[in-house]
Length: 321
Ligand SMILES: *[C@@H]1O[C@H](CO)[C@@H](O)[C@H](O)[C@H]1NC(C)=O
Image (cartoon, rainbow, N blue to C red; front, side, top):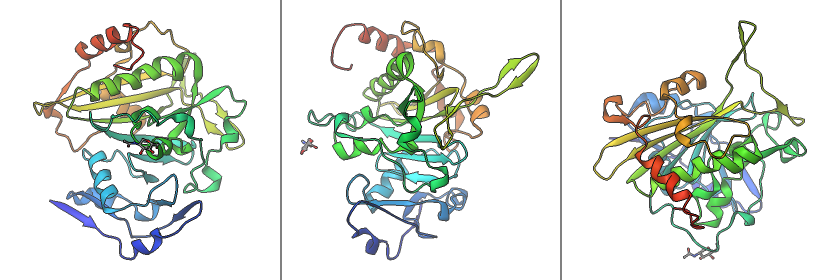
C-alpha cells in the first residue's frame, strides 16, 4: 500500500545548470511514503524544498524518492523544515541553526568502498535552501574552537564521491568539540554503526543534537553556547539511535547519548547507552513510531556486538573492522 504524490512539471526544472539551484515546489512533492495518510498529511509541502543541482546535489527522481521512502520507512520524527538528500533526510531547526535529526539507512553493500573516494575532495558548504536569516555559515565556525561535526558521517558514503560530499552541507553539521569528541568517542560511535551495519541486513540510524538541563541551586537550567554572527547553537549532547534488522528478520535497537566535551578514549561506548524514551523526551519527538515496539528488542543491556567491536578496534588493524 503506497500513496504516491507525483510532481507534474518537475522534470522541467531539472535541466538547470550552473551552481546549485533550489526550486520551491509548493504542493509538488515527489514523495512516496507508505499509506498512512497522517504521514503524508503531516508533511508541510511548502516546507519541503527540493535541492536541484548540477554538482553536489542531485535532482529528486523516482529513484531517489524511493530511496527516501526506504530511509524513512519506520516513520518521520517530525516535519519541520525537512530536507531530502541522496542518502540522508534531515529536519532543520531554524531557531538553533542546526538539524533536529538526521536519518540514514545503511546496508553491507552501501558501505562498499571506492579507494579513490576521499573526504579531502569535499568542502563544507552552506545550505541555500535555508532562509539566509537562519542559515549556518562556514564563517560562524571560524575561530570558535569547535569542529564542524557531521551528523550523517561522510565515512558512511565512501563508494561515491558526490554522495560523500553531500554530507558536508552545513545543515548536516553541528559544532562539536574536536579532540576527545568528534575525533575521539563520537568517531568511534560512527565506526560502530558501520561495524554493526556490515553485520546486519538493514540498519537505520538517526542522529541529532540535545540541549539538556543541569541543576544549579535546586533549579534546572539549559545553558549552551552560540557561535558566529548567526548564533549557531553548540549542543550540550548528541544522540544516536540504531535500529537493526538482522538476517533472521528480528529487529534490535541501541541508543546512545554523549556529552559534547572531551571524553577519555578508554571509556567503552556501552557507558553511553540510554533508554530511547529519555532521548525522545529530551528531543521532543518519537523515533521509529511506525515500528511496533513489541517487535523490537532493546540491546541496551546486551553488549555482544559492542564488546567485539572494541576488541577489533584494539587489534591495531589499520583497516576499519
Ligand atoms: C571510484 O571513484 C572515482 C572517483 O569518483 C570514479 O571515477 C570511479 O568511477 C569510481 N569507481 C567505481 C568502481 O565506482
